[in-house]
Amino acid sequence: MTKIVCFGEVLWDVFPTHKTIGGAPLNVALRLKSFQNDISLISCLGDDTSGKELKLELEKFSISYYLQTDKEYKTSTVAISLDKNGSASYLIHKPCAWDNIQVNNELKSLVKNSDAFIFGSLVARSNTSRNTLITLLDISKFSVFDVNLRSPHYQISSIQVLMNAANFIKFNDDELTEISKGLGIQGASIEQTIVSVATKTNTASICVTLGEKGAILFYDQRFFYSKGYQVEVVDTVGSGDSFLATLIDALLKDEDPQLAIDKSCAVGALVAKNKGANPMISKLEIDAIMNQDLP
Image 1 (cartoon, rainbow, N blue to C red):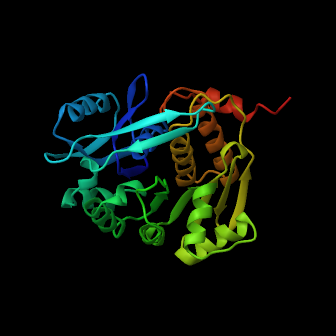
Image 2: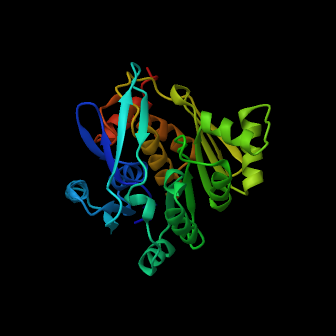
């Protein structure tokens, strides 16, 4: 069984009418678990009622949790609003408990003995969690950087440090544009931009999601394209997280890269078609949407 560690924010997604557990690392972890991987999650919660409630919710899932408790900072909450197209906007409060994840020997051993280590950019907004992340990246066998630019919680210089440490990077198209400009990269095409970023950061593999237009994957010095799948969007929360989880699961299991990118777009679309970041999705649903254009 593939051992994967996810690192970063665990929180409450607060919608106008309800709240659910969330955070990109948790969303990625839950989708990876659904594909029968051995998943561990590293984060930090506050010593408060919200933290205790969140722990109770997490106990419903068969994942190994390495959740530190911080007595100074509160459990994280993120206010989410959806526009008429289901696209999400986020108000992320600072500081919070996952800004203060402390490195220790247990975490080092966990990452050292895993097959992959997945992290995002948001957790690197604070010095403490960023330093812990960099320490763990130094001992990771295969590091996956899920770029999630959430203004004003990042700096391009910090993003570049994380890209330099990654073996695989996932952007959306807007993030690729912003970061490539920040690095002084001017590609005439998206393919040229991707190759330039890969060269500048010494990253072997890069994936860029293109919203409803699908995704492009640069892997083993080749490009793979998926045009995506059309669905009626309920909300986009967690869609990119499930996309990444599906892709990494497939590539770690040596599946064909073309099938991997198509399957990832299918799962991402199915998440967007449902309410919330972590809907149950069956293999039957995935197969059905991937075959929707067939007679």
